[in-house]
Length: 176
Image 1: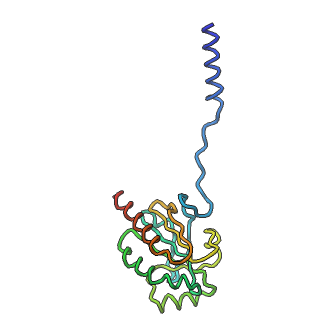
Image 2 (image 1 turned 45 degrees about the vertical axis):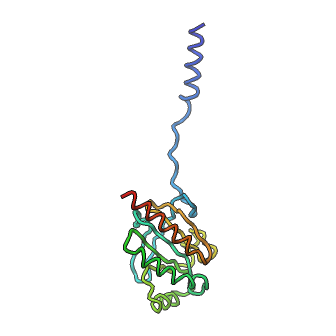
Image 3 (image 1 turned 90 degrees about the vertical axis):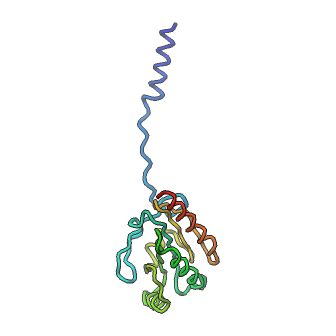
């Protein structure tokens, strides 16, 4: 009887564990940005002709601001964005604007006349589509590992943006 029982247990174990293929590693996430998922890559050239690759900014907190010069709430947010940049530019922080302006010249004039010091990318199609930006302003805050931590839409979100950046920079400082 013991032999039969032992044979049954061994057969059961082989069936349960021996026939299952090894678990596949999880495929990298390639979808639109979602909180808790890796940010899609951005490869572009900034207005001043410099290459920009989002993945090269790992180890930093990155804020990506989708905006346009014709967007009232976007323009109203510029003083806050300027102060955010000024406060954190000397830390592990990157701010980049992705402008959906129809004409590059309009963006260039605005950036020059308003002396905007952070990087600007002009793209009204590819990047906004990949990031599923269907309204502006829309802002993404990405942690030092490239994970989207905050997605903020609409205007008047200064306190939320500030809190998100501070939290992630604080987390980054405790890792050091």
